[in-house]
Amino acid sequence: MSLRITALPEPDATPVGRRLGWTASDADGDPVGQASLRLFVEEGQRHLAELDVRVPPAARRRGAGSLLLDTAVAAAREDARTCVVAQADADSPGAAFLVAKGFRAALALTYARLPLAEADRAALTALAERPHAGYRLVAWEGMVPDELADTFVASRRAMDDMPMGAVSYGTVVWDLDRVAAAVAAVAARGDLLHTVAAVDASDGSVAGFTELVVPGSGTGDAQHYGTAVLPEHRGHGLARAMKAASILRARQHHPHLEGLLTDTADNNPHMRRVNDDLGYLPIHTAHEYQLDL
Image 1: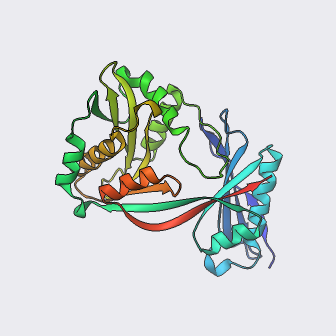
Image 2: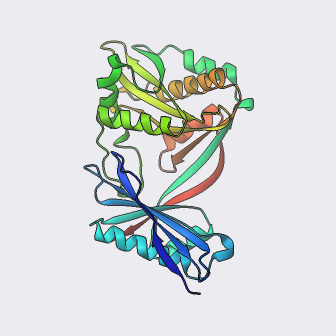
Image 3: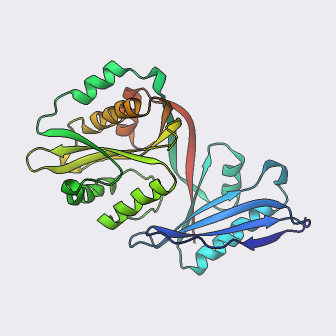
């Protein structure tokens, strides 16, 4: 099969990274696959690239996927990246393809969904309203309020020790500009960012947070982004309370939402227990694969 790889125009770079893309076409000029490579640009992640290769089932086993992957990996090497990561569902053709190309499974992720129609509102309310001595919950949409901005940025380090298996993700460094860029990226898609935070009553600082992105239509499924508590504030049930409050807010403000989606590393049993307790049901497993360059 005669194939041609065409580089796609590079979209505008974001504060987080830039993305390269390619399409594969057959001898008739018909597209038979595409690939994208995200090159992280911030300090702490400049070693990393994230790959996504997609080939329709009817076009597989003709070399398009291999050619796209090889092109993207070559671009990662040229940009001095030392590892490439990619995700595939467990036991899928994509997983077998990545393994055959030298990638190794580095992290297992369980994806789960909470059907909102089946959520136990009474139990969620009890969790969200249960007193936590020395803490209170606050919530906002979009950008963090000015009075919480500095400590909310500081609280992002709660994600630094999140279990990531053997994936070389590096460390993400947050500042207020990065927070604003993330909010703007969600808004640019037409979606809504909801945040619930736990605040230390002794000094008014953010001790933890959970984020939920809701489709702009207010229908379908919303997606949890991050839930984390600073190490010095753990052990008080804050993650469970924040996430319960987030679920209740989603139901209240978006009555036509159908469900909430989340994913958790299999080596993060604490957050998996939180999700189980809140009624999330596993729907599938995926793996993060890594290729060291």
